[in-house]
Length: 372
Length: 141
Image (tube, rainbow over all chains, first blue to last red):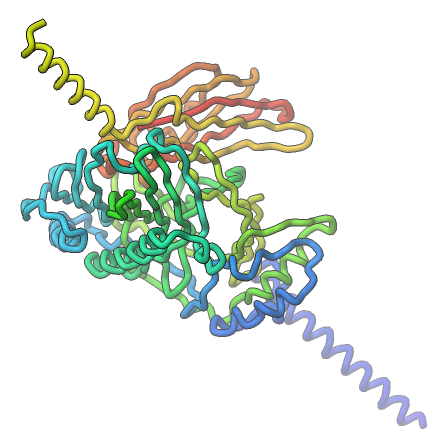
């Protein structure tokens, strides 16, 4: 009897010791990211969207998810900690010249073959009227506006601008011309990528409907993307903790690609940000899933929180240094994958671009950032 | 006026009209207002907005109009054009402490006609914090 009691005590001691050891190990892991990781929130990138339906079946008390058809989510090919470098690191005129001639073919212009590189860009045509060009590695093309067509970049000529996100939900009600322009923009983005020889794609994100006395024109806002995940290009509505200054600036404003079409559905303006090569893509094997991100928010938000989101998007947050008056070819852009739980706002006087209020959840660390 | 003179005047007026219509211009109509403040209940201490589009390649002129500012506060500004930091972008140094209109010429060889002019304004609060405020508008072309 006494022997049994000793054995039971020993077993209890062993279980307690094992529990303490395991707890300590977890504590060491947690310390690495300063956040208590719940492994249930993590999965492989292949399965990160598996729990979308389960998340929609969960009764979250602190927030309301958007209509499922409004989500901007597609299955990514992988999730990475990305380091980008400029496609034309040397700022070479030969590089630009070779590519601007290819761009001329893509945009169907005929400005001859004499490329002007005198102002740091490679330009065919007149840069103050109508041309095709490349800055350092940023492609652009625009056509002359004769005052008789819709001109989206002359804001005072417009009567109204409507801004739409591009999702399964909104596409149902979009005019056929706009749907056509979205397809054209995606194709242009792919053609420009091939001509430049960069590693990033262009994905359509937002659309605009411009109305003026001359008719209705359209615009498409695109995101640079890597293997199915877009790079943040939206303005913050709340800049209190954000910065466009220094070596670790938020580079969302240096990641914009957009097209404008006139009332005849002719391309009027194509503007891309710089082009990039992937210097390093560290595969993140264990990532926060969609459901995991929702669960983290539910755990971490205050008890009285009650938020309504318009969208949930997986995007890379780009950070680095804005190009100033001199170009540093060794500069890189660090991209961190995050889930963004978004409320869209529009500043009516600010070109009608979407601005965002959001909570983000870092796909690797699970850390939350608030810009509400 | 002779018939020829009248014709020339009419042609001249038509050309002027066409030129003014073709230019990508920003005016006070396009200006974006901002209001920064710190109160007991809320605070908005920084704002970024699209203040127009470049009318020409290579440079942009931006008007910063401070319409009110509480004593002891200041207003810092920064500007990006087409995702580039141009000359005189300021980067939040040399803040404005008084009301008034400032016109700033920004140059960068990478500015493309039509490029978005993104202005960021930031409130420098007075020591007590609460009650700090500044407002105004900005526009560029």
